[in-house]
Length: 252
Image (cartoon, rainbow, N blue to C red; front, top):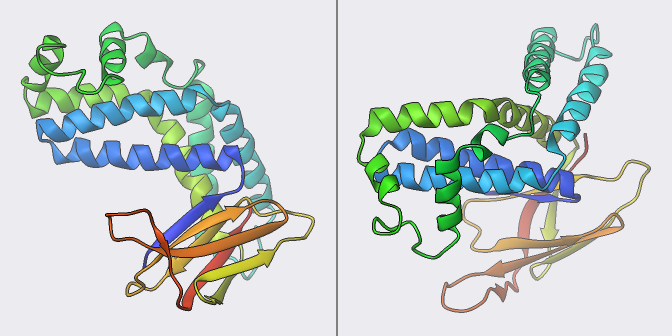
């Protein structure tokens, strides 16, 4: 079932971007071929750009501490699975300790790697990492899968606590809120928002056989969802039929 997340603030937007980029890095590293490792490295360098523009470490630590306090209050609640709760609390403790043990800015070790930064500079130019531009890079690609994997392990290690923190926070966020089954009449749906605790993200799920996708515009007062179709030869067109979907307003 296709699922679409829409963040309501910059903090959640940054986490979703890092989550997406990290998933691509890990997939391509695992695939192993030098073309996959090329994509993995360029995506890793994109992560550096994303985390460089945000006070992400402080945000993650504050949110993990807040979730630990909230979940600790659930101990003894008969409606909560005690083993699952303790597992999550232990994960939060381990990740928080790892984040606090890293005293430098996220990715700072990679930024001090002159060779990686030279690749990053060239990667901003279309076709800028061809072998005649950066022969050292193509030499590295030819060193073999095992050597490249060792290098990726070294480069990713200082970033893994950040990635693990984002995974657990987004998992909690996606699991929050009640899911409502709705219908977008003629492909459009609007809902006013209220309450003392505004949503931080919405999640839309549609059936596998739905031949359209949602585009969302939202603020703290209202959400507007419009379903569009795509034929890859022109810009998306409005879908004029009714669409059944599920909507979850998520809040930590």
